[in-house]
Image (cartoon, rainbow, N blue to C red):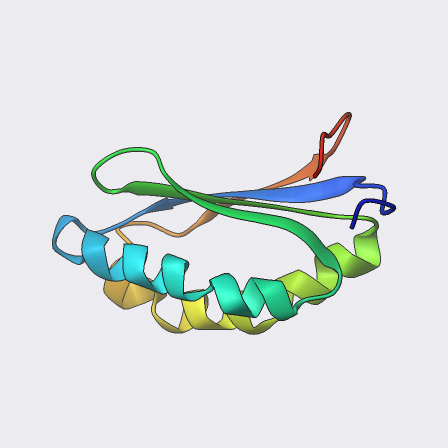
Length: 103
């Protein structure tokens, strides 16, 4: 990863139904092994922003990596449970990475 250049990312904001916040948190923490299996996903973070608000940020070397991720198992798992877990549809923002510090 140290030699990879991070150029593009995705920021996803997720608002859980209040009674389903813990289930969404468990889905996100459980997705880490899936992210680790994605060679093109250079960085992946699942974060908690508030009692029912979560976010995911991931970054890639190129658009092909980003597209592979959006068509991958994490997105499929989230969308399979979206109606059950989310108070509103996920808000996705495609980002351009201007600078990054990686391990």
